[in-house]
Length: 151
Image (tube, rainbow, N blue to C red; front, side, top):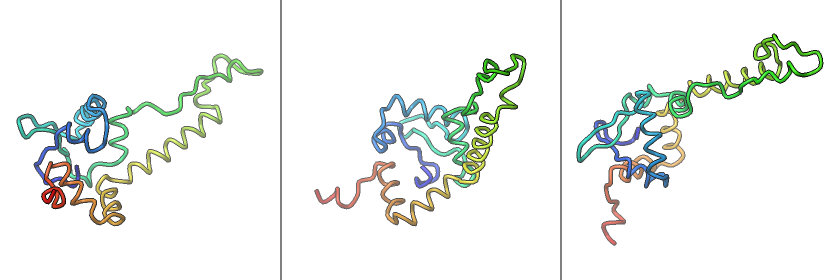
């Protein structure tokens, strides 16, 4: 959507077709992105979804948290309390080396995702695939390509 014209909405049906996803599944994700103020929903015959902010202002972490939630990926279940020498009242989420390692990995992962914007991803795709921007925008906006007109 970062390549569609500013102010133009893309229908959920067109997005589902473009990404080859079931419409019900995609609608659930789109609504999560609206709740997170990443997308806005536009009603009416030319309605659909559009970015709520500039692509430079939307991090990959914003998108991940909107869809997956903000819960920790690893949840310490405190199984060490039942091991030999375990203490039933110990806070293993804080003292367990596995829990600490997993938390460190998650913080590193989240930091990296927060550093990357969707605009940065779009720029990387354009460098690798120079026609991607035009072709994607055309498909998302429902504009027929030159090859389609001659058929």
